[in-house]
Image (cartoon, rainbow, N blue to C red; front, side, top):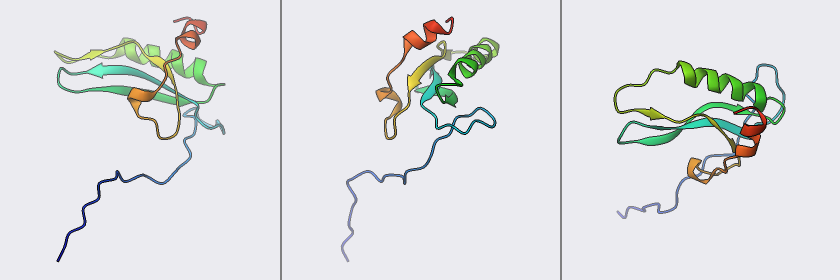
Length: 106
């Protein structure tokens, strides 16, 4: 018996990513997130996925959540940012949109 090894990554079936605002019918276009690190691992911590219309409100909520966050020793959490959301892109590939953050008063 011969085992066949898969060398290509398995892809997930496409699915619709909606804005996190309750009742909003729009697709998410942005990820509101902050870089988190515990000394060993680092990732982009997602606060919200948002459409263009809701991003100012959700960005403001993310800033408030970050301000209230308590970190364990060795952890760091950057200020939230707004990132363009594109199907199939990994966190490291997402483009940050500082001009949107600045326009919202960051």
